[in-house]
Amino acid sequence: MSEDIRQYLQECAASYGIAVSSGQAEQFQWYMELLIEWNQKMNLTAITEPKAVVVKHFLDSILLLPELEQGDTLIDVGTGAGFPGVPLKILRPGLHLTLLDSLNKRLIFLREVLDRLGLDAQIVHARAEEGGRQAGLRTKFAFATARAVAPLNLLCEYCLPFLQMGGVFLAMKGPEPDEEVEAAKRAVSLLGCRLDGVKRFTLPGGDARSVVRIRREKPLAAAYPRHGAKISKSPL
Ligand SMILES: C[S@@+](CC[C@H](N)C(=O)[O-])C[C@H]1O[C@@H](n2cnc3c(N)ncnc32)[C@H](O)[C@@H]1O
Image (tube, rainbow, N blue to C red):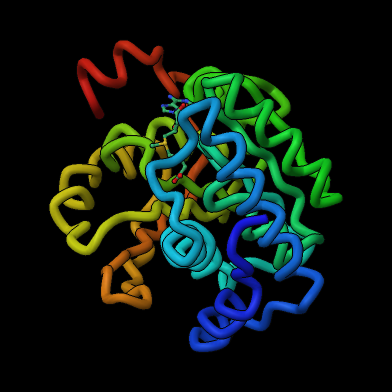
């Protein structure tokens, strides 16, 4: 077994006003063990030191928690090893969570994590821009999230098609999101949405983070999302 991170996690979360029960701390402990174990056979994360996993993966992910209610629908786009979707599901088990990634081997890892932690989520193996055209996913979600997937102007075309009317995209970004936000303004508008503010956080240890909120206020035009090559060659 790796280092016991349960108490450290509970203390870090408490300092941000987030309560983590002993059962939930146990789930995070299992998640970390699996992450470190599977990371030896596949590339899941460069962060493997237990306390760094707590801060840079778990705590970073759960800073979105105040946005979410039990029963909300959320799609985590480009979820990779499950961030931020799985930590949010641990603390809001009533979330209807969908985890989407284009890389199947990461989804096999996530299936194992969900089974071991006793959590239920839909797993979708697709590129985001393909998922955004599928009837069961297009404009079906109250929330979309993405961390470390693409620059915001491209990310908007990947993620905003999933939002229902009034739905919110929470884009997790670094300390200086302003340039990316500026460059994404046209995409936000063409995709029927509006910028709804930027929240800033500091993680224990001092790293700064931001969350860009974008909300759907108009229906999604049939033309979007375009094919992947077009999105990256000529961003909106
Ligand atoms: C750097 S990882 C970040 C993973 C996770 N969100 C995190 O913060 O740890 C980027 C992930 O996005 C996925 N990805 C990149 N572009 C994608 C796309 N167009 N559709 C679906 N997944 C994509 C990759 O397969 C990878 O798992």
